[in-house]
Amino acid sequence: MRLVDDDFESVVDEMKALYPHTGRAAILGVTGNPGAGKSSLVDHIITRYRERGNKVGVVAIDPTSPFSGGAIMGDRCRMERHFTDDGVFIRSLATRGHLGGLSKSTGEVIRVMEAWGADPIIVETVGVGQDEVDVAKMAHTSLVVMVPGLGDEIQAIKAGIMEIADIFVVNKADREGAEKVMSEIKMMLELVHPEEGNPWIPRIQRTVAFKNQGIDEVVASIDEHQTWLATTHNLETKRRQNAELQFYDLLLDRFRLRVEALLEAPEFTDWAEHLGQRTLDPYSLIDRLESRLTPPKS
Image 1 (spheres, rainbow, N blue to C red):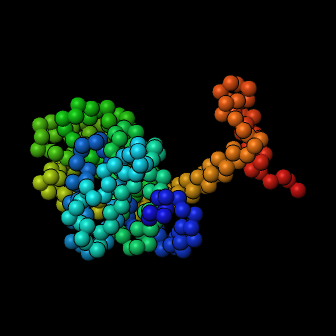
Image 2 (cartoon, rainbow, N blue to C red; image 1 turned 180 degrees about the vertical axis):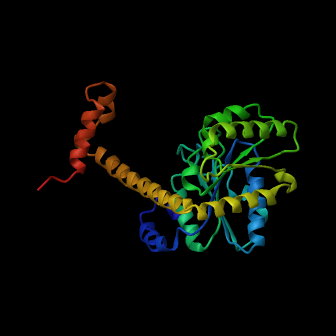
């Protein structure tokens, strides 16, 4: 996982060998506003799965240090009581400026954990708020954690969070305003989710994760959603889409590296300056790069 996160070329052969042993784990995404108690919730969810005998992998996406480029919070600050458990592996990843709340190497780290035998794998995102929706593309079941008292509940719901949530978790539900948050979520669900066919209607659970309250109900909702995915064949669709997404990410990253190397060639010297001075347009530059990347037709 370290080699993957640091972009070592030598890891490619290992990833090729691991790939046939992936694609079997349930992937749970946990996202929400900063300070919502996501790590406390994940800590107790881990415990529930370990009581069942499951190996659990956790990918904790942390903010990036502007100095070292590494994760600021780090996995040592999270879920400390699980570090001595051989059936739990927690890996922190820095976003390194990657938009959408995930690290670029998240998908590959998930595959390593799958090959190790983790099921489920929990991806806890950085908690950047409304922009953090990429987790839904990678996860099979997405949990959105909200908390009363932040004053922006409706804004968060309207900003795309509603579309990604399979389960809403109203954490810190012993606070004033918890019922209001739950009522607002129910109201919005009635507006955006159809009643025809066999759709999944997002569940709403209330928890006080710090006191280990409501966790069983959350895990029961996860189980319910996983069963729904399997019986409606949506799980196959999600796994295929996940594989396609990771393929395109790897492909685009490979081409990005090739383009960056090509831009260092003498013929492209000062290309950024020429663009800024408008002596070269970006479309012509792309045409020139494409002609170098595309082999001539025979």
